[in-house]
Image (cartoon, rainbow, N blue to C red; front, side, top):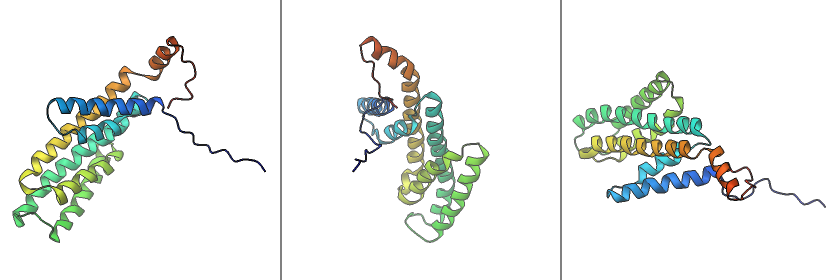
Length: 182
């Protein structure tokens, strides 16, 4: 009987390392200014691609989605809290969600970022369902800033450490087997 070999093999590749470096350095910088690094790290993880162009696409989707979802949330939520000053969960909030998702999809497509729909939807839902009435604007602006920081950081890591440069460096160190370090 022939043994079946699994196609998956556990290895730490270049993209894995660059993602970990980007997220960890984001967290370190945020620790240094006593700020919660969660969303910057998420931006770094989402923003890392196999190369700089892939990072721009992945990060752009995340960043533009956060911007679009945040802006739509900031526009709709004050209308909702005009009628329900306590915020909370009232059935008319579903109408705002419905309108918000439609605006999100249309805006993302209009700006040519269809990949922004999912991350934008996350931010929109968090603003509508999980953000205190008093902080929805600052929350939205902080998410946009933090995401932008993480995405930009991931792109910079990919620019500073392209595959070719890392391979040359490792070859100089005597490491010649890269095992497709994706």
